[in-house]
Length: 556
Ligand SMILES: NC(=O)C1=CN([C@@H]2O[C@H](COP(=O)(O)OP(=O)(O)OC[C@H]3O[C@@H](n4cnc5c(N)ncnc54)[C@H](O)[C@@H]3O)[C@@H](O)[C@H]2O)C=CC1
Ligand SMILES: CC(=O)C(=O)O
Ligand SMILES: [Mg+2]
Image (cartoon, rainbow, N blue to C red; front, top):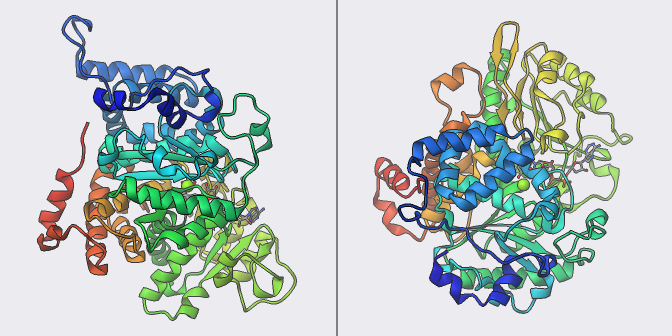
């Protein structure tokens, strides 16, 4: 924020919007997302040098024992010197991503109200209904805004309803937009909506920074969301919106309600669908090479039928359809299991989002035991989006391994402590044959003298490139074809070395290169769908377009 912009904000307004309500004067107002200019000569030590300072910063980071302390250090570094923060991110992606994103961001959310130090992002609460536009106009960099990550805190990772403590998830995702796709930091807008919380512990916590009331009914939230989206499009006409970590009912409802009207996508449904399809395609190649089974013969079993599980199932189904299967054939490849067991028609009433994949070919008693379900379904792939730690136990993995020479097992729940299994367990119980990807990172393992690499099946591989492509093409909406293009762009981005190591996702260190490939595919898909508004890009060939994409990436 420029100094001029800072003085235009009446202090009492800035305080209301840019600090959570509960800070109530306890907190001194200080807004500084843009770093101050370089201090004049004499105001820094004589031997301060950027390259050496980088070593000093990484040493300070590594000197902290706890991940949450490292998170706090990095947050302060981002405030004080965002160039240095992003330099460290880009040069140490594998080390820093787990600190600014899952798993550590989960703890940062839980502790947000306790660790809060200074304003970052926009907080919009139920109390702002009727004047949301006025609140949005308090954002200091309106003209520059290109991407907002918006959460209502109702389902943060697998941690449940965290209310206004969900803000760090919007901040963390946007840091990955900057690091991973070169989105300019000043064009990112983290937003947390406060519609109350049903988290009893937070409601009783005197330090909790959100409204002290239960979540409002869906009808009231929908009126709020309508006003919010209209005002967002007025105040930020060039903005792409990513909905993040809304509870499943809201995630589907608001994606459906707004996706035709505004450039918006839901990361948990669509981003996760895209990233898991991509990893599944690479895993299926490895698995099919061992079993001789064609892609059309794979059967995928999901543990978890929420926004993420059904989002992935939908993406897989649409891919199978592109391969020439009928809708029914494609649907029949997929089996959902939720907290009540296998999802099938005769089980009784069920939520709308599960109906498409509800089985019609089973009508016996409820089937709850995962081993029994695996023996009945005989899946080639087992995907976990259930938030149930250790659900993929030894009998489950042994049963998958008895059925498949190379079982595909993806425990995708976040953060790491909710993962359905760990990498070393999956290796031991499958005799080293597992093809593995998880939502949060696990370390590489050695088994029988061979190094094995876990994939990270996390939407962080997709949303930066998808967002970059949508922003550069000025897409008026985010179509299914753009999401699919992002997924296939990622699947094709493995290089020879990664393929030789049986990896299903590329190394995270290559994220910039991957994001530019994904952005190219997304822009082409937007053009094909006719939703692009930057028509000059149409006449560029792919080489010129990739050069253009790279030239638009911000570098620290
Ligand atoms: N790897 C990635 O990129 C992503 C991972 N996720 C993770 O996926 C998880 C689920 O997210 P959502 O679908 O939005 O949540 P959700 O709460 O809507 O879905 C959870 C599902 O698991 C089922 N479930 C709960 N207990 C179960 C049990 N004992 N046995 C079988 N099923 C059970 C529920 O019935 C529900 O269908 C979260 O941990 C989230 O962090 C979400 C998005 C992206
Ligand atoms: C990765 C992600 O978006 C989630 O766990 O919700
Ligand atoms: Mg999410």
